[in-house]
Image (tube, rainbow over the protein chains, first blue to last red):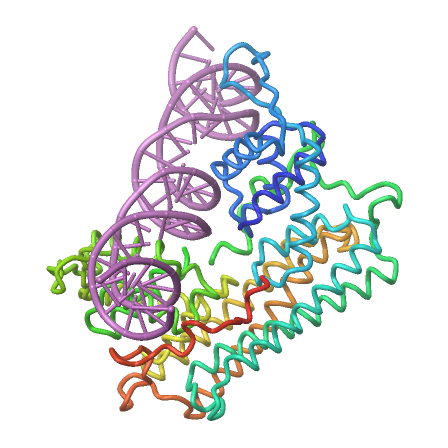
Length: 213
Length: 213
DNA sequence: CCCTTGCTAGTCAAACTTGACTACCCACGG
DNA sequence: CCGTGGGTAGTCAAGTTTGACTAGCAAGGG
């Protein structure tokens, strides 16, 4: 699965109540259109789908400024909140190598209590180690790794990537245990969405780092 | 885009002529169902789509053993070969952080001449550096990185990942320049597909490393 | 001889993603 | 006062992905 549901649930949740364009705007503010599949179509689709699944509640809004397309405001339900935390915990613990999930998970990590965040990240390192062991054990033929030829470079890449990520995760655990950032229940949360009247500094940036992907 | 087209084109190309099930079997042999979206539906869809786009040529085969579903054999066209190398070169040079593309690209890298492979990988490191510079420059607010709060950890992850990959790429360049592996035009190519009568050692493996993704 | 199991080969509906497009409104220059 | 550029809010068709399902045949056990 992609990160779109997590991102949309997280955005709606932070607003309390939001219509599609607001969510879309938040995700753009977060730069999510650069590192995830957060395009208009996907966002509106996810909203409708999750409303159908009772994760969001849709309020039909009569267009106050007569005319314009029919707007719908969404509110997260209890089941939606449950699903949100389920997705967030899964994204934090599972080693799936997808940047969009990782980035979204870190963005929302402060919605969890500090102790749980640390525990989940430790579980993550455990899974990375497990995966690493499985690769080395499972994909090396009996006659030694030379038999793989250049295919061995793929495992090499996987191991290298896994090690780099384990290292980064340990660093993050250290910083969180050292008291960095503000987690759930620790006072004023980090402001992650745009206020009504606030302009989006990233909305029309002429150059973004991932343009050459 | 996903790696499915590259994988399917590469598989058909190595066979000369293949029907869907053969391609599917190769990809399973390569473990591609583990690290990419190489599921039956995707494979057959890609074959049909690329046949429609004249990248593959479809031969309708009258079912020799009367009955059974209608089989179609595919052969790569000139345009398909062009597209194959275009996709391969792009996968090797562009920094897009997707494991499936990277793994597929390395699997097929020996289809290129050695010198070109090295050149493409060097271009890749250049792009990684460029991306790294763009991230550090673009996403750090004027008041210093502390303003980002935990969001700064996302950039931290990106930078860490980019550095790890640059390092791995440099290592690979070194090994290739040092004479490792057998590239296009250097004699017997590495055998990457299953022969007709060969059994697939990975087909029914009871445990695979990515099962807990 | 029949029946289950497994392999070969592939289809299908439902969900998701993409990129382009629509429609309305407002501000502002000429 | 007119049109045009930009912001707001969202739709749509086409393409892609997923996971479950179908259907024929062969081997082998009871």
